[in-house]
Image (cartoon, rainbow, N blue to C red; front, side, top):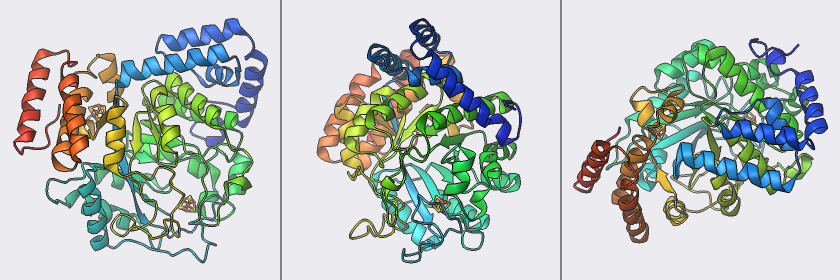
Length: 472
Ligand code: SF4
Ligand code: SF4
């Protein structure tokens, strides 16, 4: 029985509720009066529930789809402005005891090189990341209680936060590791992590069990209830995601929103971010083996609908997607992207020669960070390396609070400009520096509060003089 408040996976992600939702969406997707009413509700920035959003996802009326895109773009501009937050993944270890059928790190893959970074190697990796200009990392590790116990992860986090190299510093470490216990989540929280990220992969229980035939990850309930345990352990910021291509996308989409509704209902805080990865080729993985792949257009529609359904939740697109596709979905509400990612263990300090042997997935966008920053500026976006909220202790629903108090332009905006200035001073090519300097000048004028504008301008001037790490 569906119950949004239940702590049992099969009740807050009830299969019958998803099936009924899809049937309801099929019946109503041609009902333009209802479609208009749902779009009208989204226009009030109140978000949409899984049933409403599913009706729009099923709607094939081109005019309405364009309306949804325009609304997603408007919400993106109103709430997030033209800022795009930048991060990079850091693979710590590809030892894994699970049997996930879509990932080359699965236990039975005997020919992939297994590697786990030592603390010295982490220093090299992070130094290489700092030398590019990264300030925000997402650490990744396979599930292996012997090779990658929680103590190892905690030690890595301590090492990463402690590395100082020239003006470089990692100011926020997000963590993407396997579902674990409340006690371990508490340890992660105490270690000062940013967001805890765990992709559901698929919300469809039967498919989930088939795709995870062996290892602890096989347990659907334990995996699906992980975010509740994380929140119980004190972590306010959690990141959801499904791997599109494994199951029917409409099923996943409804499940994803039901999960967000559940976190909001039980903990009073929705997900901090939602990621939208698609299955990609990798060593011994062929995406054609999964018959639920989605087209770029469907992908764009999903992004737009996430934006209007959960307006306060950040949306992440990784380098799994090409430059072209990223360009298509940026205006539809994406708020964070990765840049210059390496998806192999140790890949930043020593890039793999053929770029494929131990990557978790094929990276489509292989540009350098400077190229990504240059591209964003040319498209009219402000690349932001901001980590201010986390460091000021503003977690949970603070973005919503900032939005509701109309403080985005007085807070996120100057923070974006100041962190971009740091990037331009320390890491940018001449061309990017020139473009970015012009952008900062124009964008400073958009800060409404004169005092904040003045202080931001002063800080930017000070950054030019060598000072670092200002924030609002
Ligand atoms: S997806 Fe994660 S848990 Fe599954 S095999 Fe890959 S690294 Fe292991
Ligand atoms: S000020 Fe906070 S909400 Fe705004 S971009 Fe920075 S970290 Fe994000």
